[in-house]
Image (cartoon, rainbow, N blue to C red; front, side):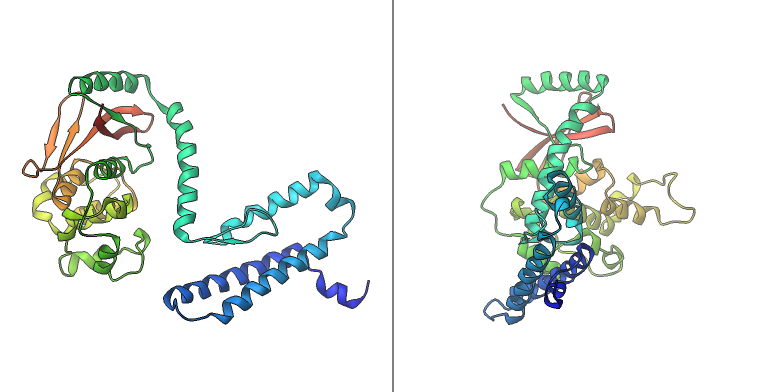
Length: 326
């Protein structure tokens, strides 16, 4: 074997190292390309060529490894190991060792969301409690009397927000404001709960909720709904303070009210307080069906959304579903 062949062949670990570096550089260049859409990006072209060469080098280096690479079982194990490193390429899906497919973060989130939903279906069926089943049947029979039925929402911790979102998407259309208007309010290119610091909204100016009474629900998400509820409750303490109380998890001397709002951002299950806040933000009447009683928030608003509350439907306990016409 001559020196040129040695240079052309690299180890798997070296391949991974270079692949990660190139992937990060390509992501940066693609971001620049998004900002400057009309400008050619020679660096991006060069990086993509380097990616192709790297894949070719690794393929060549493993083409002559004999029986190990010719053994289907061993090759399958190597491919499986390589694919476990997909997570290091945020925004990049690598379905095979030598293939490279760049996708947007939004598309990647959609892929992951689909996978989660498939897993949730199985978990839902396994987690129903006997008492919850009886409650579900009783509520279903009641809803039949008003020509309505339950539309199931996944019990993923966001069921309250997702049930309201489902109702909005069934009810609201032709809206004046869209996702970009929300991002303009934040002065951000994209929204993430990870970047939210509630202290900014506690001590700063009031957030403008005016656009959300006529906002396209396709531009909303459970994360955005959590953000809106948390900030609204935080900035309207006089309306909600009497419903918020300290828990065992609160440290002595902690700001109980702020901690409650912060917990909304961090993923705590939704409650009546958040329903009340969202009714005021969205300017919608929200009716909650319950086996014990029904209650409506925002009676003064014309458009009505319907959800239902289950006390013990799943092993995790409380749950919200959407309610639709039969």
